[in-house]
Length: 83
Image (cartoon, rainbow, N blue to C red; front, side, top):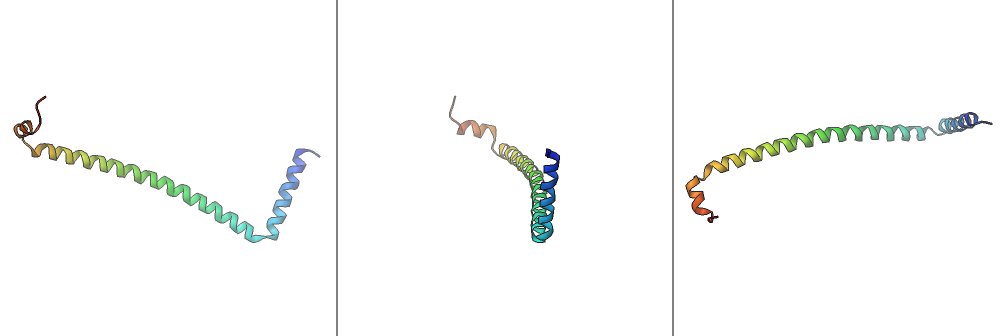
């Protein structure tokens, strides 16, 4: 017997077992559906995380620019120690 016959017998025994136990098929389908859901959800989270980081960075830059304009340069020179 060759490897092709052995593979055929193994697949045949798996299929006959699945015919006898339909809950095993349902569990396998549920697991596959869960894996697909997790993969899609992870891809969506990565996109959302990237956009959140971009928005946070832009907001921080805007805040820094506004704060830099709040204090006059002469007042800032008086506040900072001389170099």
